[in-house]
Image (cartoon, rainbow, N blue to C red; front, side, top):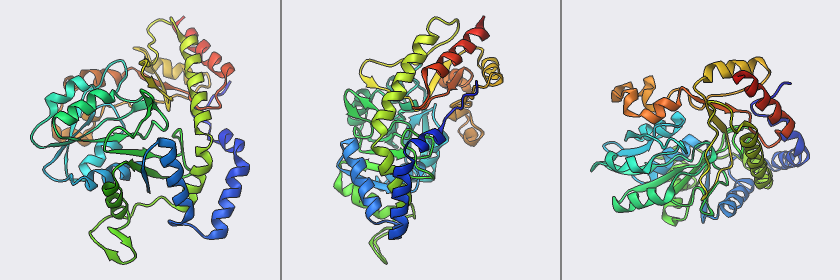
Length: 367
């Protein structure tokens, strides 16, 4: 049996008629940059997230850069974020001219460990970026309390957490700003690049919107230098169609995760994801841990099962951050995870028969 890591083609066929109709509509209206389709998606996504404002941007990395710049963060400042994430999170901090400060993660949830944040704060710290990794929200109560006590901004990286909830509230609506990516493989993915920023602060929304559009609110009236980062009409229209299906798709991901947990329970050396009772984890990725990770991955691949590693090198251990002179021992949890984590196939259309096959191959490996 051949099982892909993600199956975007099957998902497309399930909504093909809706997609082709909306694409034709965009073409007929020549609404490629800005316009009604972008406004509709921003409105739809605002409602979905239970936020007040949404600004569509070019991609998820830009979303973080624009957010930090709009908060006035730049050279001389420091921003704290998780040591276990994709480089886009830390890269965005560096792009503002600020210094990235890594914080180790909780071993169970693999999200930023609030108990370690305080020791990272200096008089130059301006913000915390918690990453809702793999689709599971971080411990927002603790993070918000730390931010409040130290007068820090909170910018949530929700690139993998579309629709995820912490104590019943959607990810992205806890801090000052929530940032999303719509990369095709995400729970809500475009057919190209795209991103969005949500906030409840009207003044921030206006500044973000201007910054993403060359520092202007109307043509040729530039109030300051910004950048060009706009969600195009085609992607916005596609996202509006897919957004209608997102809750159903997320629920299917949850069902698949529960099936995985059941089938993999009790297998020697294998650690399945931990889900705290107060969070709705919508499994952008289903990530297990194994001390035999590399051998297990090879065995799964040989048996037709596509896997991934998210992420094989913890951020502080990357060559890109060698100038910070960190050692793996500075971040023991993240450095340990990088050698053990393995992402199994996860997408809404994955079925029980496929999961049972994956589990049987894993059992065979350990046998």
